[in-house]
Image 1 (cartoon, rainbow, N blue to C red):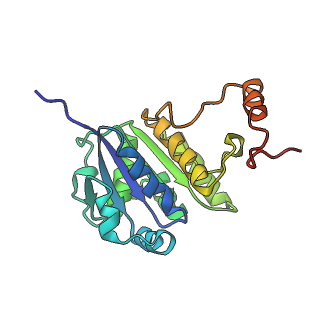
Image 2: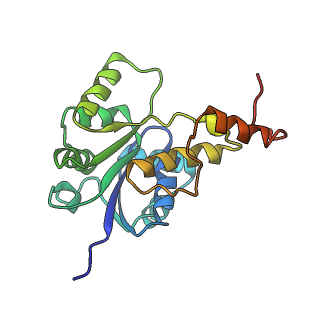
Length: 210
């Protein structure tokens, strides 16, 4: 009997940073996984405004694209097995729904199911500054098992381009799913090793000296 392919669910909500969801879907293509995509109404607007990506192109990045209004889709059931779900980016509205179990659409329902089935749920929460409500929703979601992962730039990785910053965050997300490629980025091995690497690239414009 053939083994079922690993499934990963990707949600894109209406916060800024839709490129993270796009790049994650592109990165998942290098693995033998089946990707399922669900995008909120505001998420579609953000994809168009920030990435100039229409619905047809976005849906083509996933193996299966679901309508957010289809609350009876496979993702809505705990019997639909998958390795994890990522909401990239995760708006504060979606975060609040997850934190309080408010299942009003397929995106929030799929996230709730992921938590109740004790599977990995990664939320790339995007907002600043944060209100007390935002912070409490983060702690509530984290208390239920979600990974709160704001896409904060990792300057210690010495990024040279915006694409490097985005790519590193996506790599960290893949790591949460147990899928990160060891050849994509170098893991932190301590300050001594890091500084030796910096000295080996003295003319690198990305290296800032105090």
